[in-house]
Length: 261
Length: 275
Image (cartoon, rainbow over all chains, first blue to last red; front, top):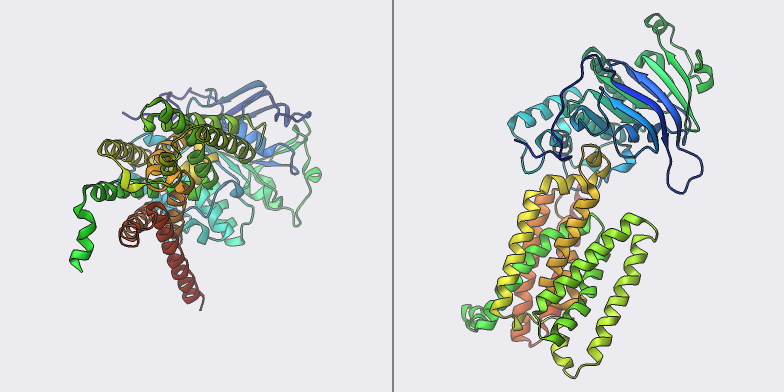
């Protein structure tokens, strides 16, 4: 039996529950007069790739962190597969911004990715051969096998983002909250990450991705939600047919608006 | 030559001193690796200083010095944890204010006493004055600290480099940090008899900082730091026996010497890699 980090035992999924349901969510940072999230409501069915766009300070990161349980809302409710935040830590994974990680710390890429298994192991249990094998498989999939023994600071920006994504995949979560996984990413890394997102969709897993990269949104996502000053601005579902008509130039947020809610 | 090496340890106090120094070296090296990597060097130094009033109060009342020191150390560790959670004052500012105040309080109480000589051992350490009873306490602290670090290795490591992800899977990074501070309080207290209040942070920081330049794996860094600290302690003991110098200061300077050697090795290696 595992001693889980949260002290709670894993709960069973609720049939037909939405991947994520937010109702009138309000989040304030202490000392700030304006709420970081202002009555945000949102429903996400499972198996979608959702892009979260908006300027710096629009609340993208706050939204992801609140769903991940890192910030506590002042009002409103959050349901993840029908359960409150923290009821099933292993089913939700949060990929932090690259700047949140101390890359100079002496761990290898492999060890960092192995940490994705910790939520399943809990206190006192060490990763076993199955966990190791899973890590090697994911490293292979993300093109990081040859870098497995490198210290994490010896990776490029794109490789570091792939390592963070590898850790999120190893956790085998159903809801992936990815905070700026495309920042500082070169073209090959971006292609690999887009491939992983497509795979997630086919596995009926859900990805909510905060991003500044507005080109190719229509190719890589199924839904685009934009935030402005902590409020939901636009919500656009991308139809399959629209994919072939991907815009040639990167559009601005306001040009993405097709349906305002 | 062999006689020269063995002669100091024909004395019981030298043997006890050696064992105490080795135990403290290992504990300091393992915990010191976290202190260096998590940039907690200032806290380590502060903890060593704030222990002083606890030691003086215990000394005046004839209590066990360890007890007084540990009580003061734990109080400080929990106080720092509490202050950093509130976020009213910046943590390093709060530590700066508290640690000088506690240290001054200790000196004030000391200055009212007649026997200043005993307390100079507290300030500068006296590895040769370690008693058998102290050795048992030092051993118990070493076992406790090392066991905790080993059992919680994966959690302590993860919260050190990625506290955000750690919180996301339900780990409490702040609690693990407080735990590290508590371990630090115990370690500092056992360190004080070897190098004293003033030089304790050297034993925590210098060997680990030297090891950090030689490897990029945490367990290896801990082992290397332990090897550096142990050899520095032994060199320091010989120096104090044959050259009749203060043992604590000799141990610290031996650590500093290792640090410079590691630095030179690091520079040479990076130059070879680049060249």
